[in-house]
Amino acid sequence: MDQPEDFTTVGEEQKNDCDPCIYKKISGSSVAYLVLYVDDILLIGNNVKMLRDIKAWLSTQFSMKDMGEASYILGIKIYRDRSRRMLGFTQSSYIEKVLKRFRMEHSKRGLLPMRHGIKLSTKQSPKTDEELKRMSDIPYASAVGRIQYAVQCTRPDVAYALSVRSRYQACRGGALERGQEHS
Image (tube, rainbow, N blue to C red):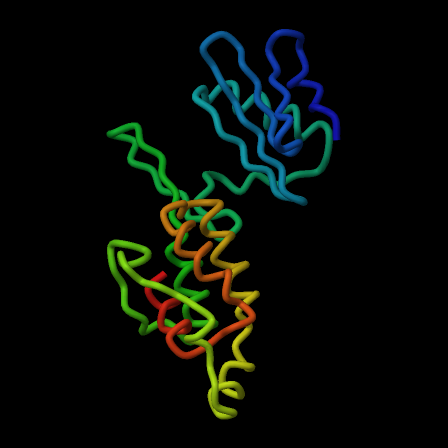
């Protein structure tokens, strides 16, 4: 998709080479970002009039419905503290759903994503038929992928723990499974 017409005035637009679905418009001290995901648009900026003008222009280009202020998008909750001019994001709901999906909602919580000194190895993988059977029902690749999404969006602090733990996807269970509860 090309830059939207209203975002292509020479000297005002900035193409995003990393993500072609993010558009930026600058006009003086006003900045607007248009983030496109399938059929959802998130419009962010520091000038309300500019945002209204962009919405008006977009509505002339295609049928759209203004859903008001964004509070949630792609599993990410958006929160604001206007008095402190602060905007933040959290995925706590998403993470709770992931924990429930993998029956880990009662796992130990902590400030650090991985305790110092934890050593994982293939020697800790399940040995008995019973351990192997129990572990074969747990979709580790899916769990790693879902946690990776959180790492990319709002939780870079768990990247190292996820990296260490994901090295042992083929050797699951036993102490390795308990190691995941701390990550």
